[in-house]
Image (cartoon, rainbow over all chains, first blue to last red):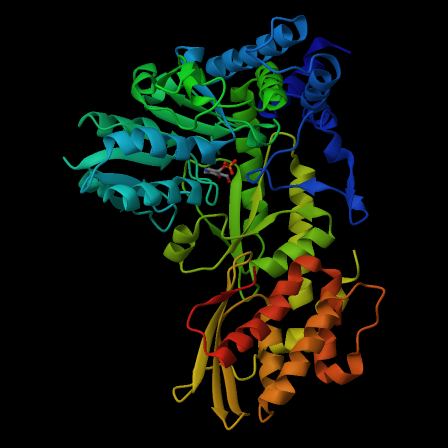
Length: 422
Length: 150
Ligand SMILES: Cc1ncc(COP(=O)(O)O)c(C=O)c1O
């Protein structure tokens, strides 16, 4: 064979995924299983992701080899556990390009992170008549904590509208920004629509008025390379379980100066410096915000998930998923009577759809019978559903371990839905 | 998985496509709203009660095939019946959907409503079928607060 004959293959490979999707898939034990007697096709990654063997093994290794409480013991096990936990913090910091691991607080997930900010920074800095800007496409976890805060303080919530295609109206946002705005809290990527919001622009518009910004990265961290310094926000939150890591672990990143000034969230062990009945003093950040024994194995697992993703590269993942999104969109659009909700030009690999005269819940059940797991419902975005005047959608959300065959199985399953209702 | 045909029976599909008694009732004596948080099904039930008799019953709303058909068939089954008849029917229906799979439900007493027996093999869908009936209970009690299936 001459060298020239390999050229077309190389040219083709340049267009194809930048990594070996079959090998990646084999790293995820759950993807090797069956559902209803058929090979599982898992397309509910926006709800939670599957875990690679490396993450599963790392958490088992912690419990098997060095399970001990952290920051407390002088013995080797505790020292090892503490080192692994703190190493995970460093990995998170590097992964989102935080200036320092001191600024990374481990929490249960995005929900707890938003609640933490609302209950601490919010209670100190937001007062009666102050305004908080959210958007119509927020997950309930970036709405309700602010409503609770507004209820306590008398603050007012303003909501940026979303276009029919699923894009934030930046004009409306610009109109809402005012001298009374104290915080902008917006999602980076919509879990229901897939829209990637122009967070850098959103932040710079707020910064022009000195307004702090919280970015909900729950759906962006698993799919895009994140640089919190480039985004320019003040708070950034995400959940580990959507990032191929265990449930019950996530992170809040906030600028060090803000964390220093914020009061503690919960009280207890580890978050104190000294305790007496005359009064207690607080530990340094980030420990000030980590009361009690944390999710040690979860943090370690999160660190390993980050290593795993790092070896593949987030840019390669984003590129592969984008290609798969285009393919899935094209294939689904061929089905008559199917409408995609959320058609922004900048999208992560989430496809919400509805079908004429067929309720999403029925779609979900029938598709499940074909071994294809998708989400149906309001996706914790009831205000957004109200905007579109629908109760629910069916949603396929893709990850880098999905492939075109998964998409084809989904399409065939959706055809089956039509058959049942024909 | 049990056969989808057990769930989506022709009778059910027929009621989904052409729901009976699906309209508002301006002269209702009692109404109630039902809401299934899981799938977003919303139903409003209208009752016209007269001395313990369900003179008229209708519903509006948006729901999945199962909840729509269940509402439609419930209204057919109950129109003209007394409240005293409705209660045991609700209990039979509920038992059919929630009893263990090895227990034979009393399909005969349920009459046409027996087509929903396949739903119990799809546990997450049971609430879809029972939503209209829970909403009926609320309407009978004339509660104003929306019921949920939680
Ligand atoms: C955009 C967005 N924000 C926040 C969350 C909340 O994440 P968690 O439930 O892990 O706290 C989710 C999860 O669905 C989400 O999609």
